[in-house]
Image 1 (cartoon, rainbow, N blue to C red):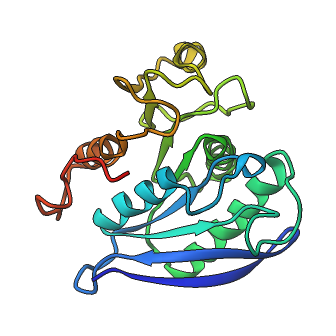
Image 2 (image 1 turned 120 degrees about the vertical axis):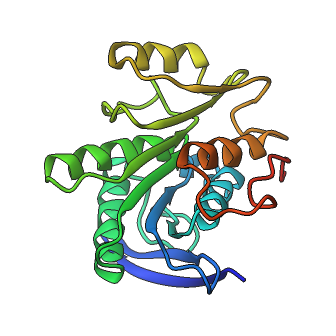
Image 3 (image 1 turned 30 degrees about the vertical axis):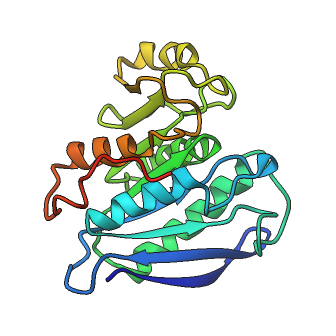
Length: 222
């Protein structure tokens, strides 16, 4: 059975509220995943259904997953800082998790606004010589935010009918980098009735090591 625990951590604007989710007791963690949620001024929290789908996917893959509420959300102190402070806070979470789970690779994942935060953090980590294991971006916030260039092996998933971040904007951002994107037919920005595709594709591209048939089921969870 998977275990979850709440935590607080000192961030750049005060206390950050978060949750750790662990794989089953008999599964040795194969890595750490940090999941970033959508825009806080539009109701985004760490319990957003896409963020939770990413968490469950990585837990199923054997990762310890950390999520935080960004500044001003839930019990996290501060106010929205247009992505800069949020990236700083995610970097603090990254350092804390690498100290808590030394030697384990760290994957960065995010949805919508969270993709901007994670792309910026990935760039910082690469520049410091400690690159993330991988980047997984769902509903990448192309043109809405100054997304950093991303590694060639980044997993990108987008909805065909996303009217918040149009697919055309994502393709314009990716074209100079020559990086492909997985397009889910009929999916809107929040992947209504399409959440199972996120889990299915991430699992498939990770190789599905150690997963059961139930865990790789593509049925939608929303």
